[in-house]
Image (cartoon, rainbow, N blue to C red; front, side, top):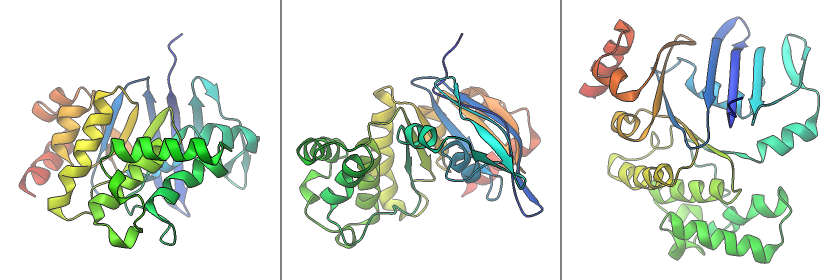
Length: 256
């Protein structure tokens, strides 16, 4: 039996009468880098948040290392049966957000140490060592005593990546990590992400960076109106798309 780090089967998600995810299935094995593409409103970020249980789906199944997350249906929403199971699994799914989400009253070092100390319950000495390691990995250790407001957007996002890495997760989830950045700062974040992919880390990446998706991913999913319109090998999808909608999307992205 193939072990998938993360698997979603037939996910459905709606907000009031608006169906954002209609029937979406994805699976990621260890070391996969999966890019999720689509126009605004196609359901990309919702898919990521449902897999991380930041939002609960209305239908479908979720598995982590082939362990099914137990849900019950309550008022049309799937809610977890076992909160301890959710907390344990969520601690192994680290999210990097579009808007950085750093704590402004904490130094960079404190931001990275916070979750390992309070969620994983590791001691402060080990958390400090871990924070130094990952701030160094993303090339921003020299800013450890600064506050978020003193950093550029690119630097803040690299701190966000270090904070995610400090949880030592089994999978990294990136929700459009470069879309809030000025164009000249995008590459410094993409370089870090390429480095992580080359290390064999499992990554799900919602992105508008077509070169990253084409060159770094080993699998690409194109969402349209809450459904997977096309998926597969990035070279095939980018060079010979079957879907007219994907072809149109790529043409628009290439012109932007």
